[in-house]
Image (cartoon, rainbow, N blue to C red; front, side):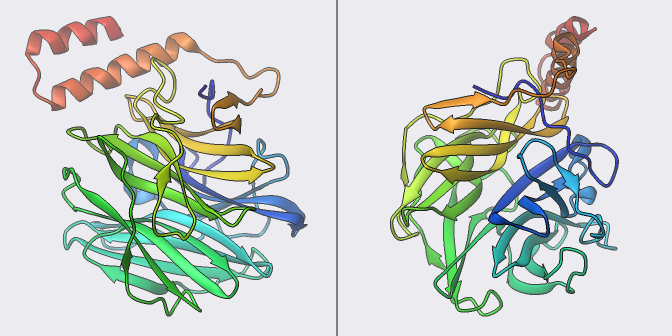
Length: 337
């Protein structure tokens, strides 16, 4: 079951429309907080604002900027054809490591960079850890002195029906080895973004946002898979664990998501988006077969009518872009009024 509404998480641009969360947990607490999140704003799909920002929490519901941290951590690139996106967070020996993508759409060039901090306030300059023609959604894990970075290799046109998962490994995130291709098959779907963690039992588990073949990456739903070696991944169930709601705040897509697992219980923070391109981060928890939405504080109510109208307007715009018959587009727009 989907979250009834997104969490109220501030963003440095003031929109509150955050996406692409990655949550890292410190059991003992790090600088006073048990949970650390990196995310980016993406209001109405404005990728120039996708700069990584840090939020902290002790309950997973109330998230705040970390006092003294730069907000965002990385500024918008000067080149108007270049933007940041796709952050990932790893805590190793109390040091915070944030990885993020920088993409030049004109030249179809992608880099993954890393910044780090020992106190959450003072951060290093970015260091490039990957360069390529195309790659999205780095997901990084550290275990027994070895760093591993998975990411999706995907055609830059965003219209391909093929993508594949690769991994690079090494003793340092700045000296990762050659790419190894992983096995990840989601029948009828194209993998697009993922988060991956090494869990308590030693297995690797991943949440994969994938879209139906013949569709596009604005219509993803969320799948769960696992692996013994981090190379061969299998779906834990054939159906998505989360898919877009009918008329809710997350009716268009379930995008890149993250999780913390303890004693078989998952806490999942997921990106949702409406047809009118309003975005946010929702929270559900439970077993994979019985995820339940979080009960939000009293006084927060769902404005269902506004969400229906918002989705209707957005869906009309979507149809217009697909060059549907004019009378059909006008009919949908009349319903949205």
